[in-house]
Amino acid sequence: SAPSAFAAVDLGASSGRVVVGRVGAGTLDLTEVHRFPNTPVRLPGGLHWDILALYRGVLEGLRGAAAGPDPIASIGIDTWAVDYGLLDADGRLLGNPYHYRDARTDGVAERVWERVPAAELYAVTGLQHLPFNTVYQLAAARDTAQLAAARTLLLVPDLLTHWLTGSVGAEATNASTTGLYDAVAGTWSRELLDRLELPAALLPPIRRPGDPAGTLLPQVAAETGLPESTPVTAVGSHDTASAVVAVPATDPDFAYISCGTWSLAGLELSAPVLTEESRAANFTNELGVDGTIRYLRNVMGLWLLQESLRTWAARGEQHDLPELLAAAEEAEPFRSVVDPDDPVFLKPGDMPARIADWCREHGQPVPETAPQVVRCVVESLALAHRRTIREAARLAGRKVSVVHVVGGGSRNALLCRLTADACGLPVVAGPVEATALGNVLVQARAAGVVGDLAAMRALVAATQPTTRHEPSVDPATEAAWARAEARAFG
Ligand code: ADP
Ligand code: LRH
Image 1: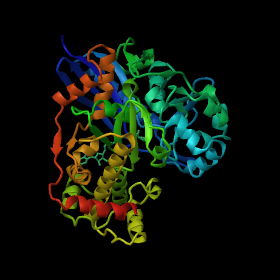
Image 2: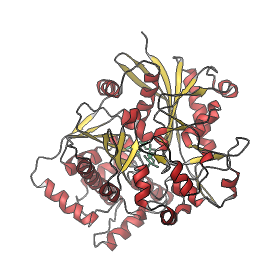
Image 3: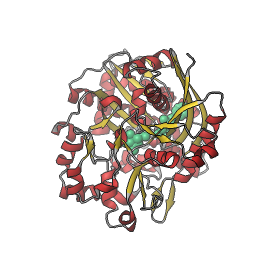
Image 4: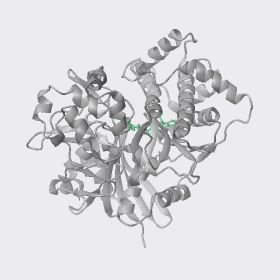
């Protein structure tokens, strides 16, 4: 039978895209229909996502999908995690969703822990501590007029789904990033909501990847040219969950790094690790597709590079990324390395200056040129990948024989090669668009076109190009990375 076509909406922190994926026996291909930048906006009241610009991009992409050669069997939506919009009693959006890098959560976690200690939060949710987890954002909003007027909270992919279909729900993989989801029971944690005095009624019923999420509203159908009967299907609506679906692993002992704005580095497990040691190491147990657990840690990721480029561009210094990476390749190795996960790097702002300050404060040479800054960022990320994957394997009692790097960072050959050296393991790089592929595959599975997770991964491995980076065989390599690790992480 002919392949079926599915539209995937995938919004990352740096860009959004709408792609059409065709899936059939032995077939999996993607066509990018529309790509648009995701540019946050600072208002007097804080840093926001430009949700209407994003929604306009979604509609434009769906229009492109409708105009293509294949009938669209279904639509799936994934975005970054934790952020949400609030609807009032009339179902209208109350204000622009906040960006997770907004400062209003500063110091809030500590207040929340006075009510529910961090160890108790972890025992229920299995979620790593990030200052912007939804639970802290809601605690920061406690006394606002906006929260008082809110009747429904929709995570960003669920908000976009609501605008397309009118349906109200909370997709489970993304719900697992809120800090309000019980990792063992697989439901919102009523107990945590009560103890934190957060209104449980805000939270919609959970739906799972593969569940139907409605069909297009008449005005959406008219605007996009898609039939009203077009279904929206819940996918792994947390982008990282969709990315992990499309990791082309053929070896069961694999680790993955979903590498874009963030590097999400870890393992796929069948059960959460909720030990105190795991909490102290700040590993998360986020929900994957088919009840799997994404046992990983957020590494600060290519944000450090994106924000450096943005800083230079604001000063009139334009850099071409491939050229800059080629220059970084020639730069002196291990001149300076930082702990990329230091919270000083989290917020928007002058990144090269913060890297320079960090180096100065830690007795390391300050990177002077752009290639030196980039070399420092890439080596520091490779170090964080090494540390994170080794720690995940130890805490989960698992062996790792290969590291898969997917997402935009898989195009960064220097980062992939250094990650291979740092980990002492082969790195398989690609696919770049793993998230969109995972989104398409879960829709295809719901339509009965593809089988289980293993079958989906086999299809990705058979159809999508990857690049293998072998680690250095020089016996001095491990010692060099171990020394650099001590410099970066103390
Ligand atoms: P997100 O989903 O978080 O927006 P992506 O997965 O789209 O992120 O990855 C974006 C990142 O990919 C960019 O910040 C950049 O560092 C990297 N990237 C994109 N194109 C290239 C390229 N040609 N060479 C090296 N890196 C690239
Ligand atoms: C990656 C991601 C990550 C979250 C962060 C907020 O895009 O979804 O998994 O921790 O954004």
